[in-house]
Each structure stands twice: as structure tokens, then as C-alpha cells.
Amino acid sequence: MRIRIKPYLVIILICLYTGENILGLDAVRLSDLKVKQTAIIHKVNRTLDGNLAQNDVVASRLETLGFVPGTKVQVITKGIFGGDPILIQVGFTRFALRKVEAEKIEINLEGAPA
View (cartoon, rainbow, N blue to C red):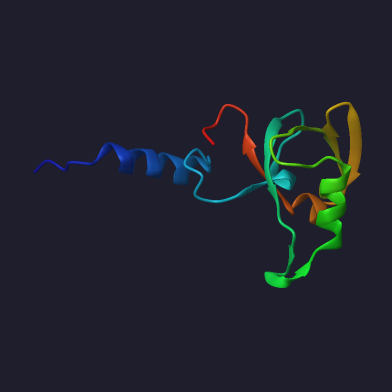
């Protein structure tokens, strides 16, 4: 008996097995980026704990500092214990962000489809 597998199922299985996010099924966060890896900012989550009525002040401040969609970011280094804080470069400016702050920023990995 032969089993036929559709090509799109193979791609999904490869993504699940390797943890790659080439299909955009889950949001990749800036805090997940590895050292020396670059990405493009997709969006900054401005809601506080999923509550649409409250705006997150930290997220608003991140956008004011230059973390806006379409901007290229790179992780320069991470802290020794638990990777906190994370040194991020946006343009020619470097910022030290806590993991909690970096998790508010959704990114697209460079070379991956948008």
C-alpha cells in the first residue's frame, strides 16, 4: 500500500519539526532572535494583556524610539543569565531591552516571506 502525502503537508511538517516559521503561523518575537541575527519589524503590540481599551505605555514608547514596522533590527548580544537584557540595534542606535519589552515586538526574519 502506498501512502500519498500532499506537498503542502510536507512543508507544514518540516516547519513543525524544525521550529521554523516560514509560513507565518505563529508570531516571531524580537526576544526570540539569536545573537547577530537580523529581522524586519512587523508590528508592535500596543494592547495591555489583550485588553483593547488600554494602551500599553511601554509599546508606545518603543514606537517613539524607532521600533516601527518595516525597520531593520539586529540583536547585538544577550545577557549571560537567561538572556536578559538584550542589546538591540535599530539603524545606528543601540538599545538595551528587557525580554518583556522585546516580546511586544513582532518581527519577520530576513529572507523569509512576509
